[in-house]
Structures are given as C-alpha cells and as structure tokens.
Image (tube, rainbow, N blue to C red):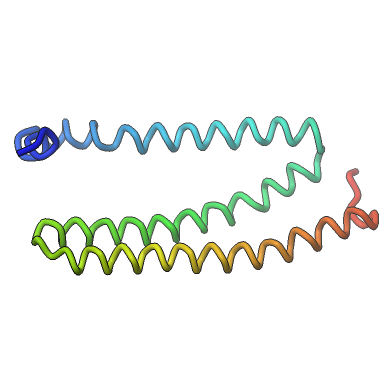
Length: 132
C-alpha cells in the first residue's frame, strides 16, 4: 500500500478534508487576486470601458468554469470508482468522453466569443464606443 492509500485509510476525515482541500482553496484565492489586479491594471490602462468589459466577462467566465468543473468532477468520480472496481475500460471511456466534451465546449466557446470580440473591436475602431 502506498503512502497516499495509507493516508486515506488511516487519517481522520477532518485532517483529510483540510489536507486535500487546501490546494483548491489556495487556487481560488490566487484566482480572486488575479481578478483584482486585472481590474486595477485595466482600469488604469483602458479606463471605464475596460472595467465594464471585465464586469461583463466575469459572469461568463464563472459559467464556463462551473460547466467545466461539473464535467471534471463528475468524470473524476466515475473514474475513481471504476479504478477502485478495477474496471479500466470504463475509466478510460469516461476520461475519453470528458476530454471530448471539454474540447467541444472549448471550440464552441472560442468560435462564439471570437465573433463578439471582433464586433467590439470593430465598434471601437469606428469610434462607436465612447469612454465618458
């Protein structure tokens, strides 16, 4: 039995919860700090319209992250249960399906967002966007 398996078998749930959730919590803190710093730099460099763009984009970013996490967490659950049952075929199929869904979602989001970004850039170049 390796070190990680022994840890999962013998440590208390509270200890495991803290040890295993700490990296995710640090990641969320770093992401929040990134958004604050991003707003400061964009606000100083671009102005009000830049902050408006960030404010509009943030909920979209959260929605994309929620969908990605839903697929990822669901796939991780199925894969871990399949590996525990020694069903490698099911685990491999699940991973393949998860990666396929991620890629399809990425392609669709990129295609749609590219259209919107080009439209906004075109409006800015024509002077239709004003920074009051």
